[in-house]
Structure formats: C-alpha cells, structure tokens
Amino acid sequence: MPRLETMVYETPEYHPAFEEYCEAIFELAEDDLEVIQARIAERLEVSRPAVSEMIKRLETEGLVVVKGTGISLTNDGQELASQVVRRHRIAERFLTDVLFLNWADAHHEAGKWEHVISPVVEEALVRLLGEPTTCPHGNPIPGSDYTAPETRHLVEVPVGGVFTVSRITEELEFTPGLLEFLEGSSIIPGNGGVVTAASPDGTVTVEVGGAYVGVGSFAAERILVIG
Image (cartoon, rainbow, N blue to C red; front, side):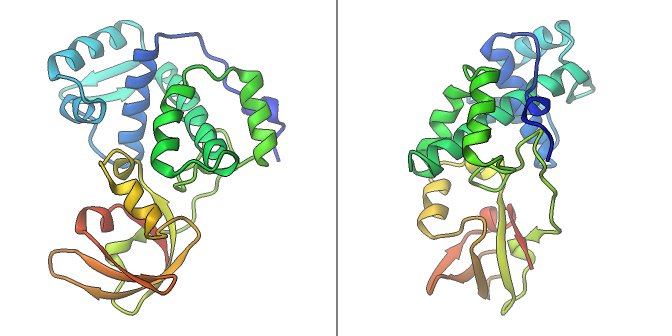
C-alpha cells in the first residue's frame, strides 16, 4: 500500500469555478464522452456563452487545450481535476459510510466539500475510511490503489445472465432521480442480480435481492457490471 502522504495532491489554489469546470471535463472523459462545450453546459447547468467564456479563461491559465470542438485537460488541468474528484469521492464515502446519508444527499454535499478539504483533513479521512479505492457508486478515487475489473454494461448481459454491479457512472449521478432510484432498488456496487427480461428498446428487468426492477435503457447502457 502506498503511504498516505504520497496520495495527497499538492496543486496551486484555483477559483472554485475553475475546479468545477476541470472536474466536469475529467468526468466526461472518464465516461468516454466527447468533451464539447454543450456537454459541459448541460453537466454544470450553465449557458453555452458562459461555458465559452470560461473555457477561454481556462486556456489562458494553461488548464485546457481546445482542438476544433473538442476540449481536453493539460497536465496541470488533469492534476487539478484529479485532486477535486479525489476529494469529492472521499467525501461521498465519509458521508455515506460514517454519517449514513443517502446517495443523492451525499453527492450534493460532497460537491461543496471538494473545494474546502485540506490535505491534512483528506489524509485523515482516508485513514479513517480504511483507504477506500472507490466512491459509494464504484467510481475510482484518483491516487488510490484502484484496479479496474473487467466489466460490461448491464444492457449487454443476456437474459438469464448473472451479474454483480461494479460502477454507477458519473453521467447517471447527474441524472435527476436516478441515484435515489438505484439506491432504493439495491442496484449498488457489490450487489448481485439476474437479468430476467430484456426489451428491444434496451430496457431490462433484473432481480436483485428477491425484488424485480425495471431499468430503462439510458441507465442500463451506463451501469457497469461484472459477469
């Protein structure tokens, strides 16, 4: 296991808005989505002109590179984003595992904590939590010992196929009502299930913990499972 102090990011301080944008770019890329201004605007719920102006500022700061319509993080931008994402996901673990907040509330609160957690508090949280490698939704914590398992999307599991939930991707975390639905349906990392039916439109029915749940195509295409 790496020493805790080697996992604490040290970056210059930036305005929270810069952190939010770099985090959004990081997470969109993590979900294998093309990073364009329209997607950033949708993720952050801001206007496209506001995104255009901020991207210019981030370019000036050396945090992003724009090629055509695509946007990517520079090394400095990647380091900043990794720090913010790391602290967000550690905060989520604390809020769910220690304070027993539900997924949706923890996600909302962690969005505030990620900007104010200091390196010493971050290190203490990691120690308290037993050096977690993922957030409650199964997404990797940057700087941890996370090793990605072989996964596929839930929609790819055939009828009768057995699976174990691995990750609820970030795109689903920002879809209104989905975190509450998935947590309430016990479709959470580590839980196993069976696909009992599949529709041509991509909707699947799964049995998890003795209950039957219909999962729409949008979620089924973005939930990563083992099996």
